[in-house]
Structure formats: structure tokens, C-alpha cells
Length: 180
Image 1 (cartoon, rainbow, N blue to C red):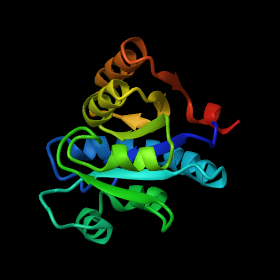
Image 2 (cartoon, rainbow, N blue to C red):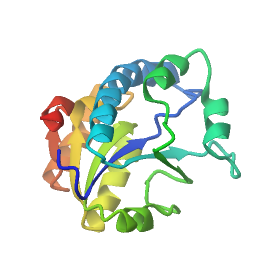
Image 3 (cartoon, helix red, strand yellow):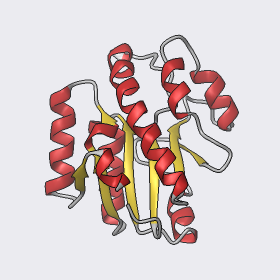
């Protein structure tokens, strides 16, 4: 992983999982949270910006603290233990599925001189895929560690990864490949 011009994006991992099949996604999220935490630690050591982009849960005036308070529960606590944001991390709230739609992310990435995005988080077949599509249309290079995204159904995750690779030219790899 190059430190110049690259950012690690963590999508919707600050989550309350209070929705249909939320517990299923939470179980899968715990597995990827451990991988994201390792990747995050490595990115931090390489001075790669870490950017959380998260749903707002209808808390339109929320900040990071409000989102963390809202999302902390019995299901999410083990996940948050691994991947809670640190003071040097960036945090943006998104109103819809894409990390770009209605956010200042594109401006932030420009100011950080970022051209490559490492996309991680949930759900792989929805918010990660929509975000990858928008990033591709903005001419960002994409890296998606397959063991750092999850969807409710494994086949949906596989489909999303295939689309990101075949259509959006994303590099699909394991998180450990980025830490060499």
C-alpha cells in the first residue's frame, strides 16, 4: 500500500444493526472489523488518511460522539471495540448509500491529494458498491480488500466484488496483501 495519494475509507461500520437481518450482518461485521482494524493500524503507521463515512440514522445534527452513542449496544459493542475512530481520523455523515452523495468527501480527498481509495465496510452489495461506482465515475483508483467488506448474503457480497473488479477496475485482494 502506497502512503502517498491513498486513503482508507471505512463505510457504515459505526452501526446499531437494528434492522431486518441486522444480527446476521453484525456477525459478519465482527469478522471484517478485526481485519479493518489491522489495516487501519498499518495505514496509520504509513500516514495514510483514515476516513469514516457513515449513515446518520436520521440524526441530522449528529457528530461522531452522537453517532457512537446511538450505535453502541450489545450487538455493536464488540465491533466498535475493534474499529472506533481515533482523534486523527476523519468522520463524515452521508445521507444516502454512496459516500460521495451529499458529503464533502470529494473536496476532502482533493485537499489530501488522494487518488486511490481503499474501500472497506458494509454492506458490500449496497453502500460499498454504490460508493465504488461513484468513485470510479470520479476517476479514483479502487482497492477493495475482500476480507474487509460484508453483506447479509455471501452471494450478494461475491456479486458486488465481481462487479467492482469487472466493471469498475477495482483491485480485489486480501487486507494482508496491502500491508507488505
